[in-house]
Amino acid sequence: MKITPPKIIQGGMGAAVSSWPLAQAVSKLGQLGVVSGTALDGITARRLQDGDEGGHIRRALEHFPFPRMAKRVLDTFYIPDGKPAGASYRNYPMHDFEGRREPLELCIVGNFVEVFLAREGHSNPVGINYLEKLQLPHLASIYGALLAGVAVVIMGAGIPLAIPGVLSALSNHEGAEYPIYVSGADGKGETVYMKFDPAAFIEDEVLPPAMERPDFIPITSADALASILLKKSSGTIDGFIIEGNLAGGHNAPPRGKATYSEAGEPIYGKRDEAKLSAIREMGLPFWLAGSAGSPEGLKNALAEGAAGVQIGTAFALCEESGITPNVRRELIQKSLAGEAHVYTDPLASPTGFPFKVAALGGSLSDEDVYLARQRICDLGALRQPYRRPDGKIGFRCSAEPVAAYVAKGGKEEDTIGRKCLCNALIANVGMPQRLKGGSEEKCLITMGDDLVNVGLFSSSEQICFSAKDVVNTILG
Image (cartoon, rainbow, N blue to C red):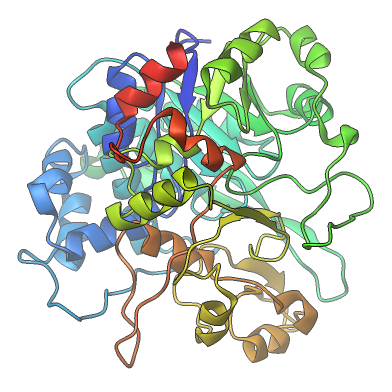
């Protein structure tokens, strides 16, 4: 492992919840700050349409190695005084297998900007976190992060066997490919490879110097999966994050036949707990995640032989987080009052993975709010590719309009309870799309079970707390 293993890895949460100010703050404290790599194309496009307050994106792009690409993105999305109040955001192009240039360039630029800004002002490592399920943007996104000098790539919500080889190839500006599962009309699937060649994007035919390959740390919930990753990955794995089902965001489904509580939550058992003795025998550093955000959590992790812990919820609620301040304060106040509730929703995510949802009035966690929302699919990050009857590849999402999903061969029962995470996660950080008729997309907050322990960092007299408060409290 190239970096010194930190005791605390800050979780890569949501879309811009783990934004560059949070990652920068944590890294400056000597721990591993991590930006979220989710939807950085859309986040960058909307920040530019809001006027790029503080000039941060434009400042980062002054250091971007391909100035003509940067100019194309700025010319397309930047509005100097911000979009008019009440106006909708211009949507950015969706990804496809044809490798259209515009969405790929926006991914490269967005990932570069986020990592560059997180690294600004210090020399400590910065990481980036991706969801394996969001496959189409992976190659362009990783290349942009590499151009900015990312030190660690973390990936969960899937089995990222191909990522180590991708990191090695792209670090040398060599072409790479990523396997993507495509559903078949006959119920059988196939693998199609998304290809990306940096040479198609490098300007002036001047090959930049090779970049240092970052460490790769996959997130896993089971020792058996960690073993598969070690044996079958396309290159070096540098450590593991062992994440239990108490963590926020997407959880791994329970092993075996699914059973549910009276409240409808999936029930986890002993089979779903990673055997830490087996993890230790692999000889790599590992971190424990899932309700580990306390001094006792760190102490227990170290006693088990871990290098430390990954913490999400506490950092998601600190001042540097991307979650809108009023939502953060409401969640903290609910926790301090003993009214916080987190529900493991087996249906919410179009990925099919259980998804932790924090109860919050006015958000999509409210059934009435969810049912009142008109289904649309205008961002498409979680669309799943499928083989159409004409042999071409199409895309569908179980959170899109039901009739459209069924017309594409999807099952109507798979649409029940599905929520548009693409729009909700961007609404979480204060950039909701304004819909026809004047309404706005609603947020959907994900938190881990550690939400009830916010009193470690906050009080009714002092609601707000910082990333420094979290780190100092955890380290004692």
